[in-house]
Length: 258
Image (cartoon, rainbow, N blue to C red; front, side, top):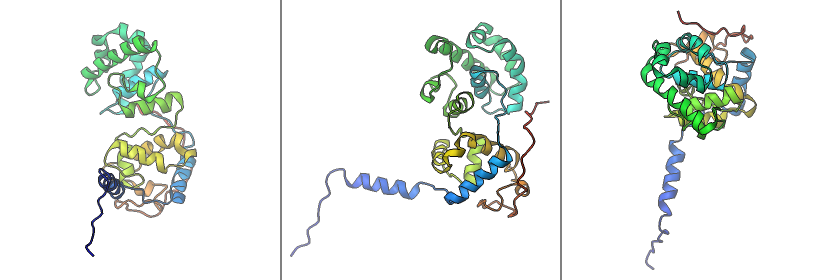
């Protein structure tokens, strides 16, 4: 009896192969659920109420500050926006200020010319399309000039209390370095973090990870001796297995640029 080769139905093999490929290439956390729970429990003890370090007075000024912070330090942005927000804390006032005068306020910030154009353009769009109010959905925020997913997520979390993860440089590095939520793109890291972080810790997770990356797990050399999760951490770069004492830190002080 001849061997009969069964034919697959058209289009059925490729989807299965593609699904299998996705399963093999998708990067996963190397931590158990219990380990992730303990990591964030410790962060919650160390910083019960973590805060973003960009100064703002309302949702609009937060949106502007985050948009200005791309490729700039929070301290540098704060130095520029303190006098700016004293005269322009609404889209209407920002539009009245004008692009030229806005540039004068933010000229110490990198890419200030393009950022000034975006801030004026987003102010116009907020007035024209949203009645001068900052929208409360990611999709609406991302139609504003100069506003990407990271900026939208920061605004949703800080201004409106939504549980989002904004993947900036620090957070992308941390998620990959310690292999908590590895990914090749910020979107992949965001999706993986949303999947592995326990629901009860999601609201503050964004700030805990950013502050940990900024002050402890630094880019050039992680200060493992100051790390409260050194015994759990599975980073190949780790230089210490003894965790730092788990104590609540003093209230955050917003850094000021010199």
